[in-house]
Image 1 (cartoon, rainbow, N blue to C red):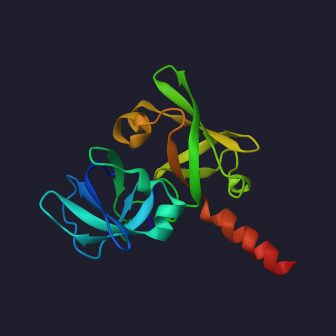
Image 2 (cartoon, rainbow, N blue to C red; image 1 turned 90 degrees about the vertical axis):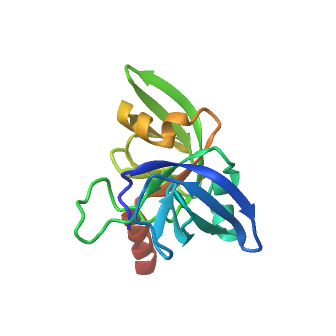
Length: 195
């Protein structure tokens, strides 16, 4: 489980196409990573499969490439990184599984002083799960939804978030990974079972 509180910005050193899908080579200052560890890359839970000097490698299967924007990564691009929450850790953010529900696209960025309001268009299938004042993870960043429309939502990005996550690098038209609040998905499933 993750919390959507990004620990570090990493940098893609390389992307290698494989029979599975692709292998990402990520440079990071995070220490203590071991083979088999989980790590969220732009909000996608991946498994560390190698630990070269100054970074790690992770395989991305075809299914993940279809459901996320990781297939668009290239050498030199920045990525949000978060290790799972330890059992003794402090819980900030919200419950983030690293199971991306779909890819949205940045529609607009509106400055508000030093902050920024970001409007994100979302696929029809996940739009009902996004609620005003609810939680959403965008590229792995835990955010509070400030307003919603039929096929979009908005979030406010404070200067700190813009500085320490990839959201500060996003522009109109850019894809972003969206994970909606897991509680909403379970509630819907329970309601379906009761019908």
